[in-house]
Amino acid sequence: MKRVSLVLCAALVLTASYLPGQSKPGERCVMFESIPGESAWPPRPPQLRSGEQCILLKNGDELIRKIVDVSSARLVLELEDGTEIPLRDLWMINFVNTQKDFPREIEQIETAEHYVFLKNGGVSSGKIVDFSSEQRVFEFESGEKFPIGQCRRIYFLKKSPFQQD
Image (cartoon, rainbow, N blue to C red):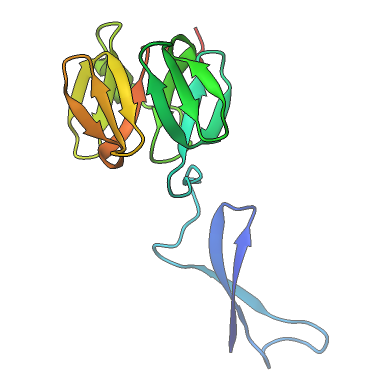
């Protein structure tokens, strides 16, 4: 029996078993079975490459880039390619993948402050005033610091540009 794995419509991983001798001349008998734990459904959001972040803007645009600085004097986010984005234009930065819909997190946002959701489940709010590209940490006005490797997402406002009113 020859086994071949197939992905059909990127939704289901199957193993096809060709059963020689159990088919008529010129035919192949194929038996499909699903492989436990290898389902491609539901599709997972694309993962980011090392050092990249998914930057989602209030206008609905999405950028996959590397953050190098936050200028508190000019209130801009600077990206590795030289792009500068005013902080007022940001909706969210996702450090894990390109997914956009996190209703449980959005429900926790109560003020106009910036909200940092950490990979360990912690949440902090305040005003981001700096990002150290050398130390790779975001800093709130209060002095509280968040290493980029511990950040899951940072929200700059509650209302998602991807929500339907």
